[in-house]
Length: 293
Image 1 (cartoon, helix red, strand yellow):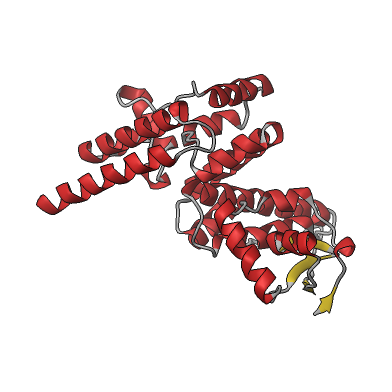
Image 2 (tube, rainbow, N blue to C red):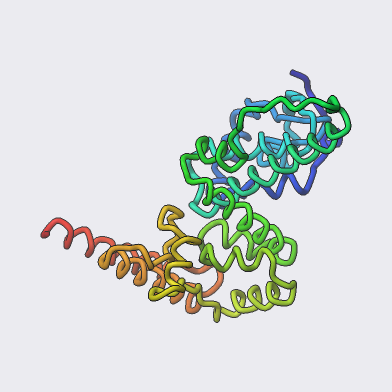
C-alpha cells in the first residue's frame, strides 16, 4: 500500500463509464463521512490507472484529502474490465438493466480475450496431431452458470451492452437514464439498436428527450409471438416482455409501464416529488387491497 498525490492518478474514461454514478444524496452522505473520518479504504490502481474508488478520489480532490492506493496486476484491459464488472455485480444496489449491461460487457470482454488468445496460438500447434479434445463449455455457458441465467440471455446481454455503449457515446445522460431504469427500453429494441444505423439511434434519443418515446412490447399472437418469446423469454425480467406473463402479471406490468411513461412525459426535470407522493399513496392503496384478499 502506498500514498499518492492527486496528479499521479490516471483517469481512464472507459473504465469510469462502467461505474454507475451515485445518487446526489448518497454522494453527499459519503462526502460528509469522508470529511469527518478521512479516506479509510484505499483506491485501487492498475498501471497507475484508477479502477475502483472514483467517488473517494473526486472527494479527495475537492477537499485536498490524503488517500492510500493498492496496485493490482492484470494481463490486459479486458481482464481489468471483467474485474470491475465482477466487483460491481457483487454490490446489490444495481438495477435489472445494470445487471444486463454488466453481464453483456463481461461476455464481450471474455470473447475478445479468447479471440486474442486463439490468434496468438494459431501458429504454435504441433503439425500432424489429431488428438480429440474434450468439449469445453462455451463462453456464454460458463457465464450463464456464474450469473444463474441461460446462455441465450448472456448472448442477448452482449448485444444489449453494445447498444447501450453506442447510446452513451451519443448521449451519456440517456445512457444513465436507461441503466437507472428512469427510461425503459425493451430488450428487443436494444438488441435491434446494437446493429442499427446511427441515425436510428439518434432518432430514438431525440424521442426520449422529447418524451415521445414508447417502449415496444413484442407481438403476442401467431408466429411472430413464438419468435418474440424465443428472443425475449420471461427470465430476462423485462417488464415489457408481456407475451409469456400470466394475465394478472401482464396487466400489472402494463399499468407500471404506462405510469412510467406518464411520469417521464409530464414531470418537470429534477422535480419528481409530486409523482413520488402519488406513487406512495398508490402503493399504500395496493397494500391495503393485498391485505384484504
